[in-house]
Image (cartoon, rainbow, N blue to C red; front, side, top):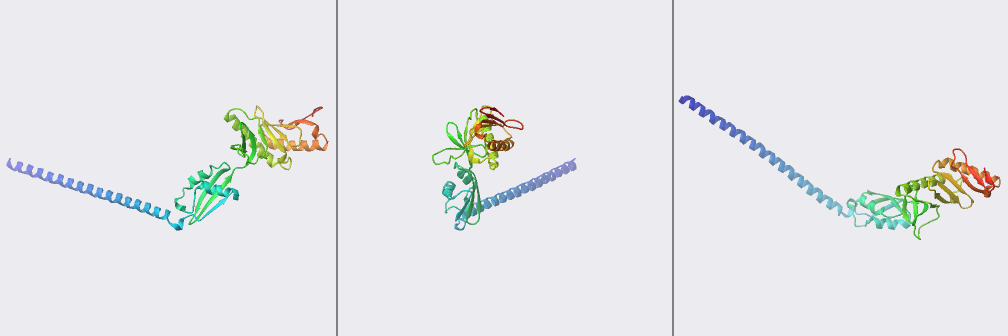
Length: 275
């Protein structure tokens, strides 16, 4: 009995030593892991401080300051306004310039549709400007300028050019008006491509009817031309041929209206009847 008791006691002692050894080993591994994590975090901290310090150094370096701003897309009269809107001076470093913020600032100008800013190290900044191109003056509560995309981009002021066709008759909600403006812009773009058939300067007014159809008036022609809502390319071509025929037959100034909103022909109304 005594021998069995001694053996059991020895086995218990061995198990305790084994458990203690396992615990010490686990504790050692945990400590080693914590040390590795601490060293990794320390490395990240040092690296971050180094990057921030390096960025601050480069941002303030005189050899990276802006010495030249190249602006394309606008004339000399707009160059000063673009530079002022950019907020950039000779004290700014190329590295510290937020190009997206500069682009947004420049695009606040009503005559600028879009701007693109790029760096060219070590000293040059490129600003590419896309100006607005008005194609018509729209008569609403105020007179506003319309661009090629059918978007009203600014109110007309005394300093703005207004030698463009006048757009009248617009009404309805915002969605309906937006559709009509895009239709007008599509017609004007198409019309400008047919300048050999009908001179652009002859176009005086585009009237938007209640159903969205377009009627146009010319400076020297005494009649209205109804063009409907689409197929402007075909209709303008046919209109040019009709006007040439009327002029050749000396009936041009006898016409009261021309309706081009037919599938394959135009209908001319004269004072004495319809052809």
